[in-house]
Length: 99
Image 1 (cartoon, rainbow, N blue to C red):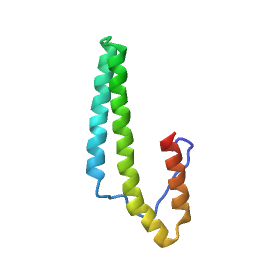
Image 2 (spheres, helix red, strand yellow; image 1 turned 180 degrees about the vertical axis):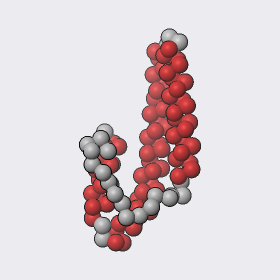
Image 3 (cartoon, one colour; image 1 turned 60 degrees about the vertical axis):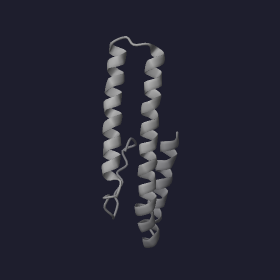
Image 4 (cartoon, helix red, strand yellow; image 1 turned 90 degrees about the vertical axis):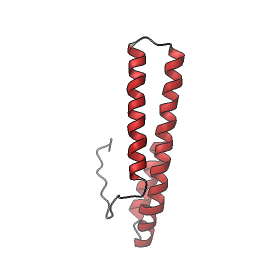
């Protein structure tokens, strides 16, 4: 994490949407590389901004998939086992994600 905090969990992170998340991230990375080339080639600022907004939307949608997966699996496990720390960590992560 950015603040140097290491988060450890007592569960694994093999969720049903892992492959979809990885695919989405790969597409976003590829798209971002294309935007970098647009800037290097002096493309119109408006075009670059439009493409950047598409990458932001893709990243936000990927975050939503991860959040839904986390709630359905990790959070349910945490509640069932009485792990209040996991709930606190989710609140911190949501806070950062929404900023």
